[in-house]
Image 1 (cartoon, rainbow, N blue to C red):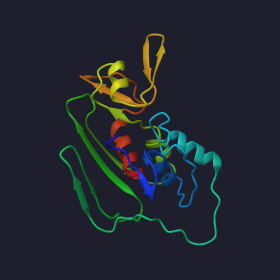
Image 2 (cartoon, rainbow, N blue to C red; image 1 turned 90 degrees about the vertical axis):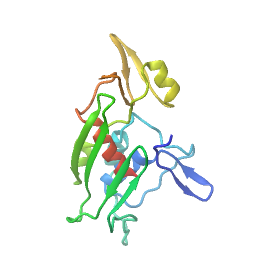
Image 3 (cartoon, rainbow, N blue to C red; image 1 turned 45 degrees about the vertical axis):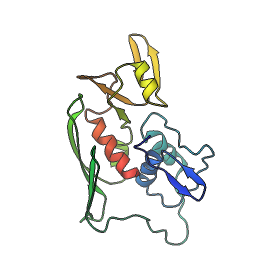
Image 4 (tube, rainbow, N blue to C red; image 1 turned 120 degrees about the horizontal axis):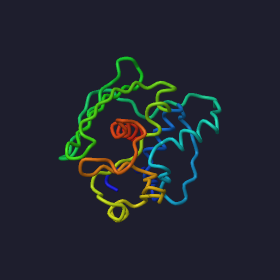
Length: 193
């Protein structure tokens, strides 16, 4: 889709890497081999939780030598389109800090803001479970047409959307894991990007 992150090396390309990359960053991993023959990272439940938990279970092994991080913010910058914008600036404390604000006034998401300060436990507690969200579908059939990979289960009393939040009209047609799950997911995506 338009809002995913891909990496390429020559003819090899892997798509939809942002949730996995966010979990890798949260665990402090800077050298990792991942086999991805299909060219797309599985969506799981629409969050980074599965990747984060698997990385915890696998553990980390120190390696000889210095492995510097590839990306650091050294000066302020803003990237804007007609639909969104993102501003970045160096952190004064040396740790990742993100102030996020989203405005989806036409749906129940509304305006949400959150300050996130990165530390070993904060990703798992505050971001890992935040799922992808969509605002256009008005029904399960519409979601299936518009959103590849959309999953729903028929449960007593109705449907349960298992891999994303759907907001439409003036209500959610999914349950939320956090009251401000959409802004948390945007922060997680930004870390993975």
